Image (cartoon, rainbow, N blue to C red; front, side, top):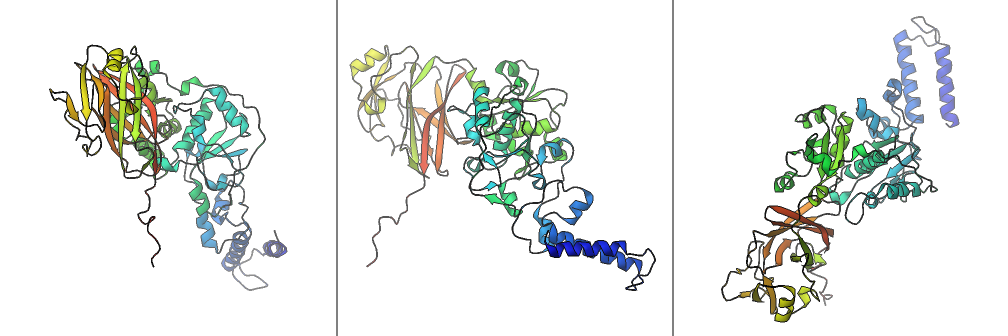
Length: 510
């Protein structure tokens, strides 16, 4: 506090002590009401000047619990200061876990979990939430998770405040709630989530840094809480209520039997978790005294629903659609080859996806199908009792749409769909076998479904109109036959790049 502010404080205190309780001041001649107004005005001036972002009302009613932000610049006026940090409106369990901006700094560690942050809350350390997942988008073993947190300088005894989001996933707190769930799964006691994001922090004119802070590595000793993760056996035993938190189209395409659809965005009000009354309406179809299992493709966005359920007092567990599919009966086939052309592809371009299947007992081909011209000997060596098709023509210009595939029912065995002559095998009976592809973001959000049409006995092809933002996308194939669906998850990465400028080859005007 500078000398000027200190002098003002002394003057106010002296004035209060010398204040006679009579109705009229012997010095200034003002009434009691006028004296009271003068004192309050002076006190307000002092607080607004000296305490910056802490508002008078917050200090008076005790709602301001956090430290004074260390801003170097003073607010332009008192009204802007009062609007800078919203007053916390949470109550009950929501208030205990969701931390307002005004309380940031009361924790041992502030943790940013964003994949590609450009600025950080002052003093925050960083762990990209994607590092908690392996190459198949599954949660890493507890020992690896403990090492990740320990290397970042976090111990199991620290109080941790988590914030951050995944912009390619549409923003929102899903990444933060997933890390919160993971830390709770490790047995971490003192962990909370920021009620807002970096945009709210910046809007409040709070200090940021261009780089995250670093802490010395420590040992993290987990105490696993297996009751927070649902197993396949737990899901199928019928004791729990099952919530499919994926989008409605994903739910309609296939779900766990008996599941109800509560899309993850239903627990949000813009980018924040709804208040208690809103969550009560969202979960009105659930019974409070029965456990709940909630799932999405990888569990990341399901964590928002799990988080909200936990705050509302439900016994909630996390599950994944991946786990469900991998525990279903299999078709006894393997994916022999998969490709996407072009790859990389420009935004808005047409990508042709081709998949070749074979029986698990069949001998692998000596070379990739798209590069080989198979001879009759090769075919007979790999397959027996099959019809042979010779395929010719243009594989891309003849399709035009996912439904516009060439008819391969010709009795002659000659079909115009390939740019080179290839001899491949076709089954005499396909037993209703079909294939489709799902294109997802790196976090598991589906952006497109590709209808795959049979172009030979084992080869399926489909077209994806890549009208998506630039980035890396995963292809998951689903093969169905005899009432059984088998999933081949994340079998191919497809890179989408920004479209090239149509002016890049133009010369300078002369």
